[in-house]
Image (cartoon, rainbow, N blue to C red; front, side, top):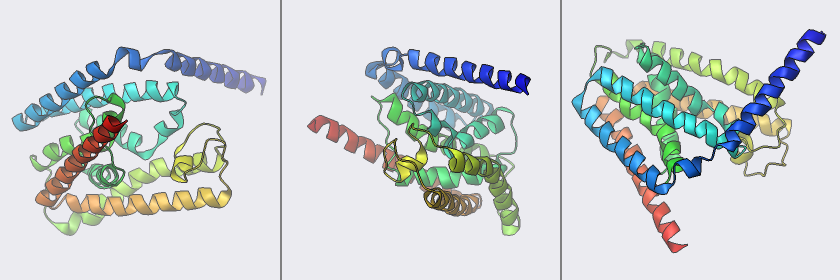
Length: 271
């Protein structure tokens, strides 16, 4: 028993060192707003060129490079701000999964409904904004939107397309099963977690970090989560059979990102 206790203490010590290291890295000093502006414009410009070129190998490489870069920055930033509990949320799970599928050239139909349903819809309704002067805000937008922009090209311009609804239930079930692989341990986390740090359930209920959710609050949060994601997966699976509706939803996602980015600039200008 003492062996396992010592192992736990060592792991906890390593975790504390990692958190302190993340906090010591000053992202704002490395990526000030002018540098961030140039990085984001470079990513946007090159993304348009790569998608237009329609080289699938290049699309895969570019997506994995950009998203890994942005996710690593997000990890450093969120540990520094004590927001690290957000990093286990569904959108991060889907992005890391997409990087895995795309980099290994696996069949993206298994995760296509997750990308083009829940993530796209969340980008629209959560008012995610494209703000070239803010790497933080644009990263939040990219986490929900970038995968759909890139994987649309990989799916619709390949041999994977099947317009027969005979496979609808199969792909919905596969995507829902992949969701459950994340959701089941997430339920345990939500039910057992009593952290004083910021986390999604507190943000969702509009509470401060000192609030400790009751059992019923946790249960309702998890049920709402499953309901919302299930509806999203149904929509995402539908997108696999209707190219122009799929494109329209992605365009709407881009337009709302630009609209809320414009509103953000106006708000900052008034300050």
